[in-house]
Every structure is written in structure tokens, then in C-alpha cells.
Image (cartoon, rainbow, N blue to C red; front, side):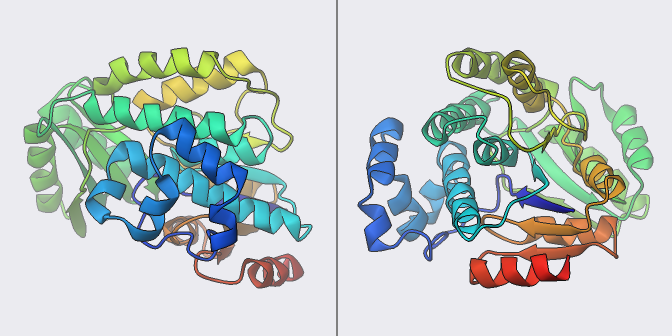
Amino acid sequence: MKAWMFPGQGAQYVGMAHDLLSDNVLETSLIKETRERLGTDIAELMLHGPEEVLRLTENAQPAIVLHSVLAAKKALSYGYKPDYLVGQSLGEYSALVVAGSMDLLDALEAVKLRGNLMQNAVPDGVGSMAAIVGLRAETVKEICDTYGSDEEISISNYNAPEQVVISGLREIVDSCAARAKEAGARRVVNLDVSAPFHTKLLAGAAEGLRKKLESVRISTPSVPVISNVTGEPAPQDKAGIVSSLVEQVCAPVRWEQGVKYLLEQGVHAFFEIGPGSSLSGLVKKISRGARVYPTDGRNIEEVMKEGYADA
């Protein structure tokens, strides 16, 4: 069994998808319509930056989805198909597009709005996020509970054993990060983000996103898509998918739980489709025996051929 994985925000970089956005591709109706629908030349930003503009949440999110879907389409064109699709946070949109549940242009519009809403949900400098490595999630939660309510601070990402991310009000995040170091965390890294993602502080952004998602066509995925909210297959109907994507904005990303679910279903080969290779690293931390195949910067046909032969 094989799963395709799609990355979330933070995977973007100037020069991304350079092998997928050739001069010929840049002149296709898809890229031209993307430019018109988004009001931004997202392909130009992906290829040439500037980096400070690309990393803005409202630009980074559609850039990552576009890269991921173009890469997936190339893999599909060679005849390879996944048994499951899973995306980290934003990557769930890429998964839904590849599963035929959402139109790519609709998804790009939705994630641009999602990024804008998330970016502006909390005033600049009020919120922050920090990755904590080397402590059990239960220990980190106890630290968070000591310093604030779940309206102020919470675990936003369960990435791997002893690797979580906390999000919330900046002062409280800083206090929790310092306490985590005292408690024995191997690493504590403040993340360069514009808002405390996946917390209740983003409730306003979630409701703004709901209206957009309800206005677009969403159908039953052709391949099971794993939900970030539950770590299990997402709902099959439009109402359920919309509710899950809306809840995802304020709920923790259960990446570790999703990967464990896939392992239990017999998935042993994980293909990372899109920019970067961070998800492959997380999968190996969850299961040393899992086989991972990042595709970014590599010949996609050769990676898929190798991985499917191994499987």
C-alpha cells in the first residue's frame, strides 16, 4: 500500500517547482487563469521571489498547493496511483484536489483567502509558535496548562513522537518554551510565522473560510484523504469536508496519528509530493521501518518507479 503526502506552510522557497514550471507551462491556460483568479503572478513568485513576498501566508499557501498538484499530476501521468492521500494542514487541500474532490483553481482561491484570514486574525506580534523536540506531548500539555488556558496556548501540531508545536499568545508561548527547556527538551525553535495557527485564537478566520468553501464545488474524493483533525479518513460528503477544513483552522494537526493510521492499514511506502522533504523525516521518526520517497528536485518518474518497484 502506498500513500502520497503533501506539505504545509513553511515548505515554500524561491525557485520551487522550477522543474515543473517550464516556459511552456507558464504559457498554459492553467497558469494564466491562476494569475487572473488570484490577482497575483504566483508562478513568478515561486520561481523568482522575492522571498519576503513569497513567504507571506496568502502567497505561500497557494504556491505550495500549486507546486504539489503539478508534481502529483506528473506522477499520475506516468501511470502511478496512490492508495491514500494525506496532507499536513494546508496540504489537505492538495490532497483533495488530487483526489478529484476540489477543482485546483477553486482550491487556490480558497487557500489564498485562508492565508489572508489566518495572517490577519491576530494583530502582528501578538501570537507566535514554537517547536519543541524531546518531550512527550503529555508533558508539553501540562506545561501549557500551567501558563494559560486553551484559549491562550495549546499544542497546535502533533508531528512525531516527542516532537510537537505550541501556539498562542507570544508571552505565554515564550514562557512555555523556556519551561520546556528546563524540563529537558532537546530543542526549542521559535517559528517564523505570522499568526498562532491551529488555535482557538483563529476562530474568526475559520468562519470567514466557511463561506468560501460552501460556495465551491466539492465532491466525494476518489481516493481516501486523511483528515488533519482526526488522523483518520476525512468525510466523504461536501458538508462534512467543509466542516473538517473549517475546524482544521483552529484544531491541532494530528500528523503523527494520521501516519500511524496509514501504517495500520498496511501502508509502508510514503511519497512526498511537493516542495521540501520535511514530511519524509517525520514519517521516519514515527516508523523507522517505513520507506519514504521525497520527490522535490528529483526526477519524479524515477522516484516513483523506484518506490513502486520496492513496494
